[in-house]
Length: 366
Ligand SMILES: *Cc1c(COP(=O)(O)O)cnc(C)c1O
Image (tube, rainbow, N blue to C red):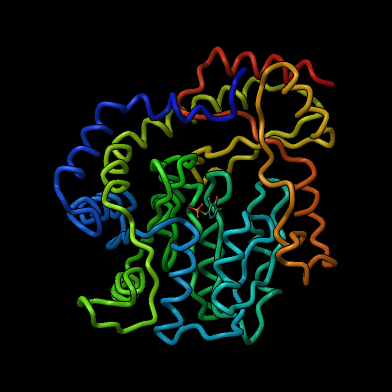
């Protein structure tokens, strides 16, 4: 059996260093907002090329708190519209609706699965205040076009970087391509903790200051509360673990690229559409997503042969029960993607022999 992602094997690579990191935290006697979080924030900001990184509890909170901070700064208010791709994970949309803001769903480009920049402008109204882009599957969006539109209409741009740690757009990294960016360190992400964790990156002094308070009960000084904040702090122990794994992130990405290149060069099956890679973005391959009208049949065939695949995502946000008010809307490209995509195993611990076996089986499918 080839699993979709062997997390145990992945983390076993760093076992000794991870234990050392956890021991350091246990022995420090300091478990919340201490030296490890502070150091990780510096290291992660440095990695992304931003002035700030602010550790939070998870990726959803990272995105939610960015919008919340803009509300505290008077830049966003209840009922404002946020442009967002229709083809994304539910968390992106929840961050918007949980802030009493209105998501305006925009169809993706069928080749890259990313928000289609040419469809953004027609969705802008007098209530539009921000664009939340998602570098889905690990490929960055067309940021020059998007930032230009944002500048023209005076909109904030927020990146959902939950799948794109380390990815570049031209000469800058994900997290440093807009006004602020939310990251998830969920265990299965390219940079994964051993539990929930997240971070926000930004170059904005004011925003960073509000965010640091918001994540910690809206407080800057103990027992003095400026905002009705939340408790969404990055744990010391997760920060210590992330500091170990951050050192190896570029290696992890390179190994994923090697597998992706192998798939791209060797999968040859007329039923299957391979992912399209743009020149200006260097994909970090959080997911290797192929597309076929025979998706369900292919998934079952591969499972029968011992290959575990996943679907990202089978139900788009507007078809979820949670958003039943949108269920009769139609986003045909997004719906087609949800019917046809299949994610093949890819990770830093998938071997070339395993990838060869997968390619052989995929090529034999009809
Ligand atoms: C994983 C993910 C999130 C949410 O991250 P959590 O840490 O699970 O809250 C948000 N957006 C996208 C695109 C994701 O893949």
